[in-house]
Length: 480
Image 1 (cartoon, rainbow, N blue to C red):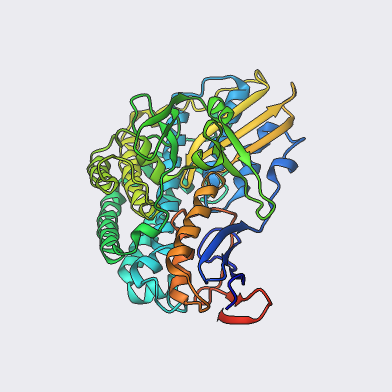
Image 2 (image 1 turned 90 degrees about the vertical axis):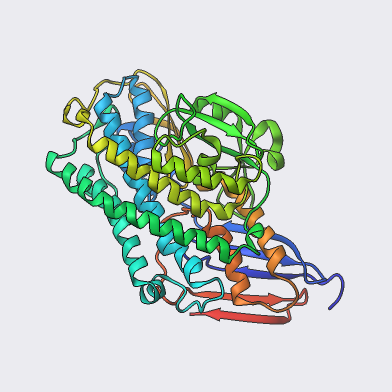
C-alpha cells in the first residue's frame, strides 16, 4: 500500500441510538486512524419554525422534539414561560414537576441501559449482530429483559398518571401544571417500589460484571480529561430540576459555581462544522479544545458533592472509586453506571414525594401576562443539561428561540471518543464486526438523542466499505 494512500471507513446508520447518524473514519497510508467524525445527518429546525408562535404554545410544541424525552422539553419550556410571566410557581406545582422529571429519568435511563446498551454489555461486543439486540436479549436473558421493561413501564405509567399520557403529555404550562396526582395513584406506585429497587440491585450487579469483563479495554471508551457541567442544589447536592450550574475540571476542581442559566450561556460558544447539523458548544474562556465539556449522568455525578438519598449516596461512593485519587470519573464508559445511580436516586425521591402532604394542595398554577421579554428555562434531561431560551414581544409572540440540547453539548466529546476507539481497535485494510461495534458503542455510552427513530429488530442495517485513495475496494461488510 502506498505511503500516501488514504482510506475511509463509513458506519451508517449508527444503530441503537435515538435518531440518524453516521461515523466516518479516515485511515492514513499506514492503515492507522488519522481522523474520525460523528455526523448528525438529520435537520429538525424547531428553533426557526417556532418564531412567530406564542410562548404559551411552546411546551406542547417543543415536547415534540423527541418522543423519548418529551418531559424534559416540556419542563424546560414551562420554566422559560415562568420567567416570561415573572411569577413564583406554586410549591405544589414545582413538586409535581419534579415528580414527573424523576419518572422521566427512570424510564429513559432504563431504556438506555437495558435495551439500547444492554445487548453489548450482556451479550458481548463480538456477538452476532442478528442477536445483539433487544430480541436477542429477551431470548437469552428473559428475566433481565423483563425487569428492565417493567422498570421503564413504571416511569412511563407515573408520567401518564400525572399528564394523561406518557408521550407528549400536555400538562406542565407557564406558571405551573394543569392537574395534580390522584390520591389512589400514590399507593399504587408506592407498592411497586420494592420491585423497582430489586431490579436496580440486579442491574448494578450486571454493570459491575461488565466492568470486570471489559477491564482490558475500558480505557479506550472516551477516557480523556474534559470539563463537566450540571446543576447542583444550594448545598451542592445532585439536582435535576432547579438549583444553579457548576463546572468542574477533570480533577474535580471547581471552575465555575453558582451560575445562573443566563450566566452559563454567556460563557458558551456554539461552534459549527459543515459536516454535521449538530452544533459544537464549548466553554469559551478556554477555547474549543480545552473548553470541551460533558453533560449528563456522568457529569452530574462528577459535579455534585453528594446525591442526598441513602441508597444513591452509598452507590455514589463506590462510583467515585473509579476516578482514582480524585472524585472525577473521566471515562465515558461509566455513563452506564451513572445512569443506574440516577435511577436509584430518582426512585428514592419518588418515594419521598409520594408520601409528601404537599400533593393534596390544589394551588398548582400562577396566572399572569407578559412581564419579561426574555425567559430561560434550564432542567436536567436524562442526557444532560437542557436550555430553552426565548425572546418575545409584549404580546408574547416569539422573536428568537435557542434550544441548547444535551447531545449537542456532548458533541465534541463524542467525536473525541470515536477517534480514541477507532485508534485502538481499527488498523490495516480489514474490517471486523466486533471492533466496529465497539466504535458504535462509544456513541451509545452517551445515549445521544438526535430524534426518534426505529430500526427493525434483529437486522440493524449497516453497510461498511473500506477503499484506498484510487477507489479500489479493500474490504466490505453488510448487515441486514
